[in-house]
Amino acid sequence: MDHAVNGRVIDPGNRFSLEDVSSEPRASRLNNLLSAFLASRSPEAAPAEDLRASDADRERVIAALTDAVTDGRLTHPEHEERVEQAYAARTLGALAALTADLLPPEEQPVRMDGRPLTALFRNESRGGRWVVPSHVPVTSVGGRVTMDLCEALLQSRRVVVQLAVMAGTVTLIVPEGVRIVTGPSARVGSLRNEVRLPPGATGHAPDAPVIELAGFVFGGKVVAKSPQRPRKGLFRRD
Image (tube, rainbow, N blue to C red; front, side, top):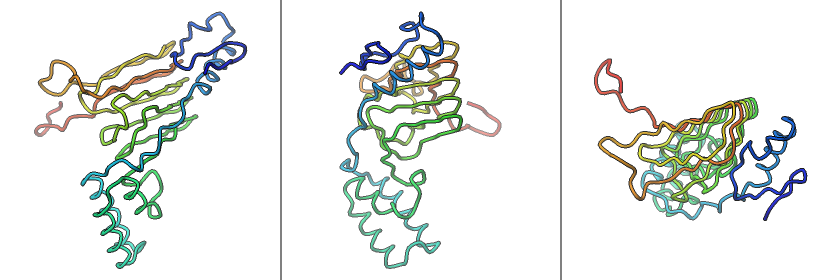
């Protein structure tokens, strides 16, 4: 459905460009851009509780349970019961329930946090083992957002990161070989793709995951990059 913003019709399927409202006063342009972005955000992805858990996911949860019994947050019988449940768990939802009362959301060994990332004059980050929905709104106004996908589980082979950046910074850290599609309009700012191909590769694999950057950047910076490779030998840099 189209949305009317200050008398203008905004198509949610379109990326936003400052050229669309270049004839309007600056304050009005910024207000229209933010309003259009908020009006066009798609609903959060369906809950990820039913996704199948891996052995690595179970081991992460068991490690958190071991820490909890060590410092007294769990009794030994509780620990034994939850470890048995972790080994028997088949879904991420079953695993997440075992540590929900032990750690804050940002420290959970398995995270299913589909909320938007928002940094208004502060820093915000998300990383570790988390489930990434197919559409992720990211807003940075005078702040810094770091989004690390290196250990993440993508719900879709194509993820749209909907950007709204004003005098802020957004950094995406993704594994080598992930394809980045850059679509946002940048004005008085920058958008860089520094994601490397795997060693020896001459192009992206046909089934490589795709991260599409949509939205707008105004007076800010967005960079997508690969994590640093391990150093090979003393004093040697990649």
